[in-house]
Length: 329
Ligand code: UFG
Image (tube, rainbow, N blue to C red):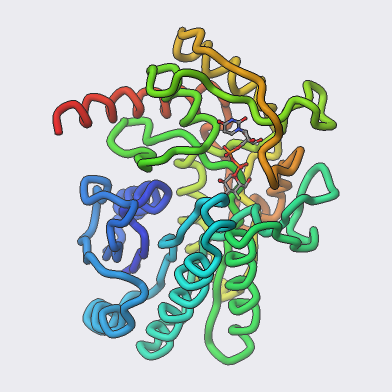
């Protein structure tokens, strides 16, 4: 199939592009390289462009005529979204409408959308399934929920179908160590812990130790980026075969506390890096664990890397490589 992948030079997008390439799909990556990297595009052709640019999107689609669009290009930092909401609504909502318009003009009717567990806000259920009401608590989560609303209205207008994948905590890197997360200002727990182990930060802060969880720290469902990439490929197959729109949670259904992640990071790296307990970070739900029954049942998805230490080891190998690459630049 011919697939247009926006944001395919970024962390999750590049792993999906690699998986698509391995299955022999014909790919165009459309990315403005604001957080993505040319070296991360292991397969297909890279078109450097912005999803704000309607005429460019139109021209690329018109020339390539993809069977489907997979949309990863988005801003993803929760704290930044609180400081600069308009930037998030413009990029994540208005620019996604540009993309959908360009698809419409070119008769492209199949869409795979990167959504997030951030749409749930602070769920009152321990295991979150897709029927849990959406109450996003920051502009990032709200922007993802708004696009889901738009998508939900579109199948009724005619021949359009989509799958939205709501990601829980994505982590890890390509087991062959070719690609991985390379944001300039990493805020995620595993990346932050590994950068602290490398000495990039003096210490790791544990944000909040008084949560209503067994060890007082927040619990998250960490999913390996390669398992997430495979979920996208299966979702695409499902969409093309059944033409049915749906929304699915992506996670393993098992949570780890911040303290458990820190202990695993120390074990994998062999480095007893400094850790300090700190106050809660605003907007953190105590527990966020996916019920991914629907993803498994409709697509047949089965994770291969459901192992916290494996997730951390691949991320650690990647961090070590990234450090070498930075030294060479
Ligand atoms: N944490 C720390 N110290 C750090 C970084 C994080 O204690 O230095 C804690 C956080 O407070 C939180 C947990 O580790 O309790 C996980 O935090 P992350 O920043 O790694 O991830 P989040 O759960 O906040 O958010 C991520 C994505 C969101 C997505 C969400 C879905 O960034 O986009 O997962 O579960 F919506």
